[in-house]
Image 1 (spheres, rainbow, N blue to C red):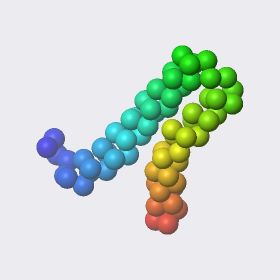
Image 2 (cartoon, rainbow, N blue to C red):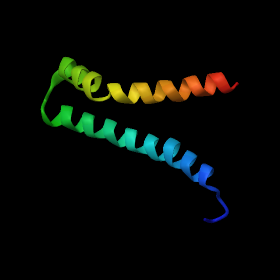
Image 3 (cartoon, rainbow, N blue to C red):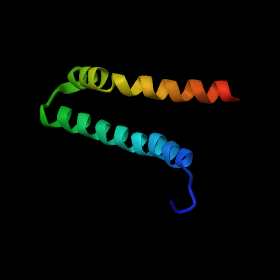
Image 4 (cartoon, rainbow, N blue to C red):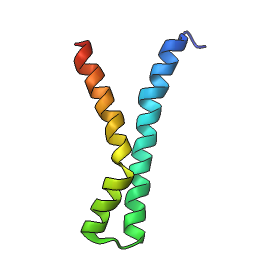
Length: 69
């Protein structure tokens, strides 16, 4: 497909696609905190609880990058 093999398409979807989705999720969490008037501590708790899974994905990416060097 357009000169790309399956591995390149999968890499692009996993890094760029999931990364864009994660940024969108951060926007949704921020919007939720804004509309609920959560305050500073409430916003922190929302980001801590709802964005905690993204930290694992980012850590996995960084660990792979470090080990491949």
